[in-house]
Image (cartoon, rainbow, N blue to C red; front, top):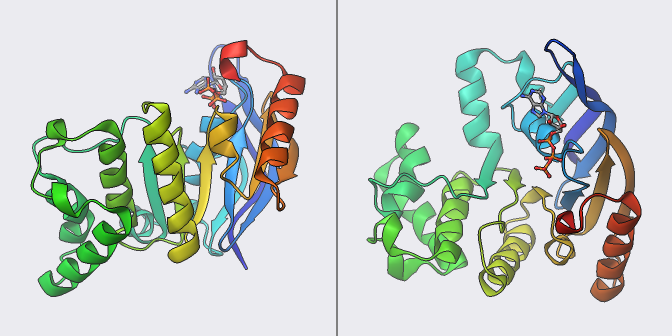
Length: 251
Ligand SMILES: Nc1ncnc2c1ncn2[C@@H]1O[C@H](COP(=O)(O)OP(=O)(O)OP(=O)(O)O)[C@@H](O)[C@H]1O
């Protein structure tokens, strides 16, 4: 079953001169898949994620999450849809600094007036899975970047959404913390069967995915499947990025 269907999606930014950010993008994400989105800087990766995450409306085409088109929902239904169907994590964690770690994680449940007992059950499940039991009462400035991203993940997953969207989730982390966070992504993908769509510049990070799609100049260019060998997959990703071009820094 497809958790996400992107059909013939285009995004045109209107201005003095209109700019086509994405053109006729078509792809599906099956339940349980972990898909990376890569491409040179300015190719349209964040635009695609924004269209899927309902941050930015497509100019034409459709986005279906579990068969539902969020852009056809009314304001109130859309807020509920975002909370129930989608989880988001970003490069800069987006935690609320006046709240503790625990308060940050349960925030989406508080907004939905969920029963306290259910809240505790869900909290315990997710903190155990992510290994953040010991930092629950800390403030956000008292934890490391890797821990902050785990907290952001816990908050994104507390509703158990079928689809997690991640924009450069390891962009602000050192190599060790980035690797640990990617192992957690793999655990989430396997144990909660959460499907994941993740934008990254980093071929090593992308090698944790089951499939990587490549965008060039707003068009879907190619895709590579991981198969059994992660090292071969990693090399194929690097080859594809070299072929697509862009600055060395992008790769
Ligand atoms: N709000 C906007 N108005 C006009 N043009 C935009 C807007 N947002 C993005 N663009 C343009 O659309 C193109 C794609 O941008 P996008 O941010 O999706 O690229 P990206 O692949 O995520 O880049 P990067 O890897 O550098 O983050 C870029 O040329 C960008 O300048």
